[in-house]
Amino acid sequence: MSLAQDLPAIWNLPSTDMRLKQRIVRILIEEIVADVDESSREIVLLIHWAGGRHSELRVKKRTGQHGKCTSLEAIEVVRHMAGRFPDELIAATLNRLGLRTGVNNAWNKLRVCSLRSYQQLPAFNPDHPQSTITLEEAARRLHVSAVIIRRLIAEKTLPASQVVECAPWEIPAEALASESVRSAIRNIKSRTTRPRTHIVDGQQTMFSEG
Image (cartoon, rainbow, N blue to C red; front, top):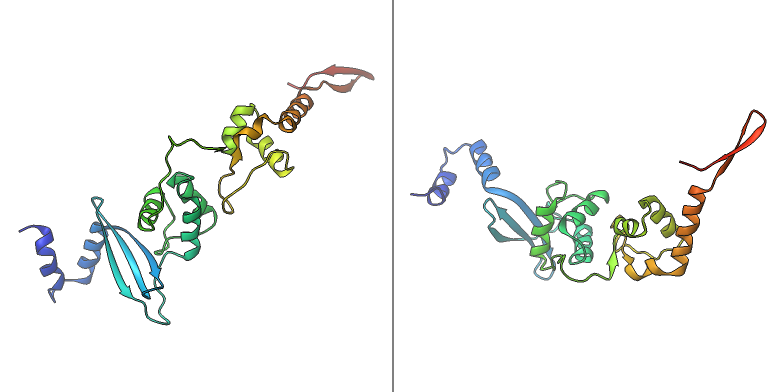
């Protein structure tokens, strides 16, 4: 008889120690993602089992009872970012916002994937053409540091947006070719390479910043 067949009998034995049950749960269950179905007033649990299987469990919501559910704020962040960013970037955003899973864990790629799948939200497709680029990609294309790109965004020289607070910046790729951006980059680069004048023994000396 397999463990799956034996497990219910072992679990229901009066002599089975609670610590044994807890160990079994830790071995078999990797993560539980919780949501609330307001239409049916049920708490919906998506159980992620070891081995990659998923199952759904619905529990009637009781008034005044607090359940360890994924917050609606976290769900909304995932909803806005799904399809536009990889799961690991969504997880990083959730963690920067200080949001936790329903069982108070930090977010990671697997947990975001489980929640996104349960919510039937699209996955990010790296092969799909993107009209925007990240801050880091903009810095690479313009041959400047990320700090300079952040400055251009703050000065509104370079248009950029975030789907939610703490999410990666999205920059229109065509904006990098605009004259205002190119001019700003030229001015910044010229300032960093402009010769400086120093006084040495009462005389001025000039040298370039190295």
